[in-house]
Amino acid sequence: MKTSDAFPSKYMKAEDFEEGEVRILTIRNVEPEELGQGQKKETKPVMTFREPNTKPFVMNKTNWGIVADTYKYGDDSDLWLGKKIALHVMEVEMKGDIVRAIRVKTKPPVAQPAPKPQSSTIEAEDELFADEPAASMNLKPGDVPIPSHQR
Image 1 (cartoon, rainbow, N blue to C red):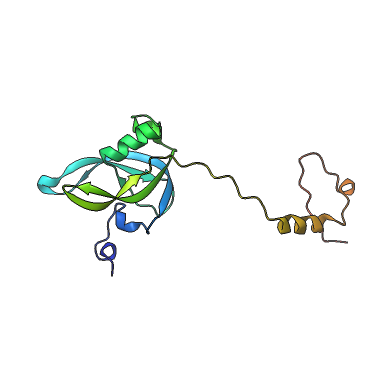
Image 2 (cartoon, rainbow, N blue to C red; image 1 turned 60 degrees about the vertical axis):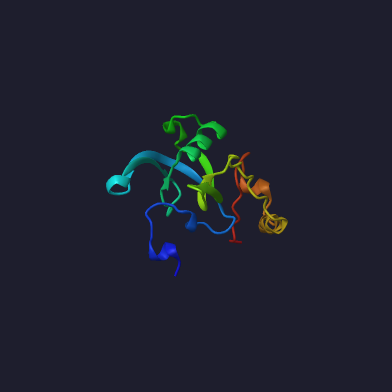
């Protein structure tokens, strides 16, 4: 049993990430929440995401600064809504100890181009329409031919 299984958290933790994993997420909201109990209770910004089944992320000043400055999204978190960020885990120093922590990557995520279809897929589609002349289908520019399997 892992620690994260024994003590599940409502919020995203470093233990939730696989080794080397990077998560690209879309910001839904950033709202202050009271965290902790008793004298340790404090209000921190919590980021939620559009992707389903993604835990909220408790922001710290370092991550806030990376989103605001490096990503050039600005210091007002209302401007971040709908923007993408990349999260990963790295070792950091905290109170004299080295610990694993979630960090916003210092390079914004780059949109990946859509994969090109494999040639076999295109050839298979071409074969579907090979015996149907385009003229007989009454196509206009931009129309997509739909094969008729009735003869």
